[in-house]
Amino acid sequence: MSETIFSRIVRGEIPCHKVYEDEHVLAFLDVNPIAPGHTLVIPKEPAVTLDQLSDGAAGGIGRALPRICRAVTKAVGATAYNVLQNNGADAHQLVEHVHFHVIPHLGGQGLGLGWKPSPLDAEQGAELGRKIARLL
Ligand code: AMP
Image (cartoon, rainbow, N blue to C red; front, top):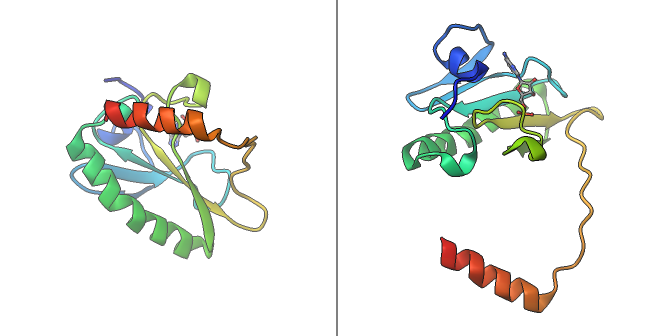
């Protein structure tokens, strides 16, 4: 659990452009948007990474996120968008409080991806799939 700028926004100590709030969730405009409508959706619970989130907070996020995506895209007239969620500094997480970026793709603005995919080996895939499943 962490004390971050987002905890302070949740407590109302720092202003934000709020677009949604309920018992578990707060959503507000990103202060440095990469596209018009770039919105952050956060649990009020101060978990650092997604895997640390309680079931209650996760349920709240799951319920609110699709509604917020609909409103954001409608507000800016986007038909495509990305939901990005970074965990850990190596994965580009700057603020250590779980947050989902809702990023409209609009007029050339939006999230750029640098994926370099390669085909999954069938044998390794089967083994890894079983290993992950055992850990769930
Ligand atoms: P990440 O790299 O996933 O941790 O992204 C953190 C995001 O938080 C960045 O897009 C910042 O622009 C955004 N951010 C940081 N401080 C604030 C703030 N006070 N209000 C709104 N957005 C913020």
